[in-house]
Amino acid sequence: MNIPSYKPYFSQKEKEYILDVLERGQISGDGYYTEQVSAFIEHAFHVRKVLMTTSGTHALEMAVSLADLEPEDEVIMPSFTFASTANAVILRGAKPVFVEVNPDNLNIEPDDIERKITEKTKIIIPVHYAGVACDLNRIIAIARDHNLMVIEDAAQGVNAKYRGQYLGTIADFGCYSFHGTKNYTCGEGGALLINLESTLLREKAEIIRQKGTNRCQFLRGDVNQYNWIDTGSSYSPSDLLMAVLLAQLEDMEEIKDKRKAVYGIYRNFFEQYEKRGILKMMRIPDACDPNYHIFWVVFNTEEMRDHVLTALNSRGVAASFHYLPLHSSPMGRKMGYKPQDLAITEKAAMCLLRMPLYAGMTELEIGHTLNIVEAVIGAL
Image 1 (cartoon, helix red, strand yellow):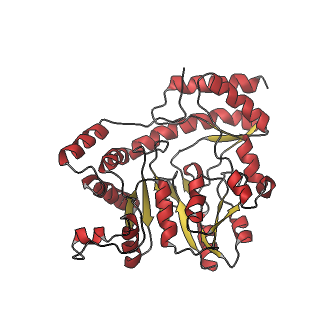
Image 2 (cartoon, one colour):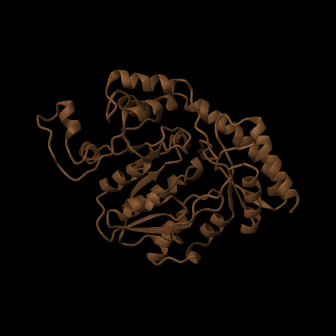
Image 3 (cartoon, rainbow, N blue to C red):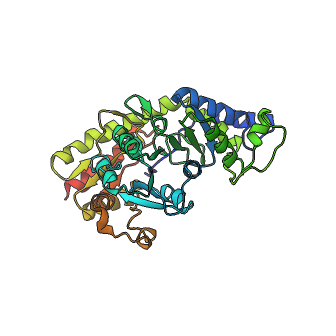
């Protein structure tokens, strides 16, 4: 039996909406479905302004551009994240400063944020790992004390909450991903959430997104000429992708509930091994309402993790490890970091096992997966 690590959950609406796009005749960016998706997110998540993008990476790049970073400015972020978080900063000539994670949830550790702030620090980018919120109250308080901007990397956090508010809507900016591996997907796509009230900032974001032009203002009739205004790039997604995404978002609660059911089975199963001291399960703080993007455990040793991982993979189950820390990557080493600089992050990355989790995962697939784990751990 082959069990993938993730699988998109589709209804029939995706096909219906794609055909509608073709009939409407506009498959490029900012068509009918782009407007529908933007409006859906703004209404459902209570967002001031949403701009759809071609990826979560591009949403991050736009957010960092709007923050007006200067060369040699510093941006604090976890090392346990995808390269896009750091690349968005490096592309502006600024410097990522990597900090530790909390071992309970692998989210950025506020104590280490405070230790790493310097006079060059301009932004904090908390990453909501596995769809579980960071300690945003404390992070935002730290940022306000030091006059810093906060950009939520909520690539994995769509439809998750912190103290009743949706992730991505709480800090100055939020960034979503709708990549094929995410809970709600259109293959490739993202969104920039602008939570500040500044009209000038929103207009600047529109210009950046439309190749440095005032196209959006022109189409609204705000200006009478369509012109090159500033630097920018092509960040507007095809309306075909947005048609798929609208169908996904309309079913987002059903998708979340199905993922939650799989998560619950995993949690009940692995609890016995945590009690025996073999591994540690992820923790969800009381303030968090997750979207059940990932279920992970951390084994005591890398050898034990690899043993279980190999057994699962050899029997067709696509369990996996996850991020290799940025600070100890080849690029991180070029920046002067060493693996031992962030010991908690390094240990977690070496010993983490990520289980297959997707909406619609069958009892047979779950049972097959857990039987392998039971057989392997029982033999240890």
